[in-house]
Amino acid sequence: MQTILGAGGAIGNELAKALTAYTKDIKLVGRNPKRVNDSDVLFKADLTNADDVNKAVGGSEVAYLTVGLQYDLNVWRKTWPLIMKNVITACVANSCRLVFFDNIYLYSGQNLNPMKETNAVDPPSKKGKVRNEIVQMIWQAVAQKKLQALVARCADYYGPSIQNTSLLTETVIKPLSKGKTANWLISDKYKHSFTYIVDAGKATALLGNTPDAFGDTWHLPTAKNPLTGKEWIELIAQEMGVNLKYRVVSKTMVRIIGMFVPVMRESVEMLYQYNKDYVFNSDKFEQRFSFKPTPYVEGVRQIVQRDFRTMS
Image (cartoon, rainbow, N blue to C red):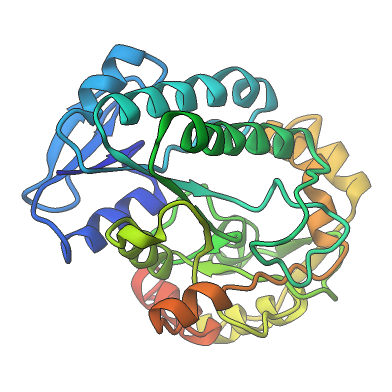
C-alpha cells in the first residue's frame, strides 16, 4: 500500500495517477478524499489528529505528504509542525518510508539563480522559516529515530486542471482566458522557472519507489532556460490566440490590494522571488533517472488544449 496524505490537491492528483505504474494499492487520505483511480482506497482523516494519522499510515510501505494548508502565516505556524510531528511519529511506528513534497522557501533569497539542492538554507521569509523547521524535523527523525525519508522539492508549478494554487494560472492564464489584463509581480524582466505538475507527479512517484533515493533531497524535473515574465505572458497569449494585455504590479500595489485580499497580503514577504532571476535546477534528478522535463511551450499548449479548448 502507498498512501497520499493530503490527497486532492494538484500534486496529490497527479501523484495518484503516476503511482499506478508501481502499485494497484493506493490510499488517498484527507478530510474529504475523492478517487482519482477506480481502485483507490479512500480514508477520511484529520492530519492534525495523531490517532487519525497513525491509522491512515498503518499498512503502508510509503507515505507521501502533499497536503496544502491555507496560505496564512498563523495557520502555518500552528499547523505545519503538528502535522509533521504526527506524520513522522506514524511513519516510524509503522515502519513506513516518508516522501515530503516541499517548496523552495527555505533557501536564502540572496541567490535564486541557480537553485540547487546545495543552496544555502537561510529563509528570508517567515513562511520560509516554518518550512525550514518542518524539514529539519524530518532530518532529525532520520538521524535519531531511523526514519527513512526524502524531500522532493518543487519550484512554483503550473499545469492543466489546477485551481487556485498556481500563481501562473491565477495571474496570467485565467485573466487572459477571460479577455482581461494579465498581471505579473514586481518586474517582467527576470527569468522565472515553473515545474510542470505532471512531471512533478511522475517524478515524486519514481522517487518514492526508488529505495536508494531516500535520505536525500531531490529537485523535481523542471525545464531549463526559463522565460522572463514578459515572455511567459507572450507565450500564453499566443497559444490562446488572444490579445496581449498585461500590467506589472508593484510592491506598493500588492500591499494595497492586500488590505482587501488576504492571499495578496500574505504574498508581500515572498516578493523577493520576483526582483531577481528565479532559476530552478534539476540536473541531479534528470541525470540520475534520465528524465527529460516537459518544455515550457509544450506545457502551456497542454493547459490551453485541456482547459481552454474553445479559445483558439
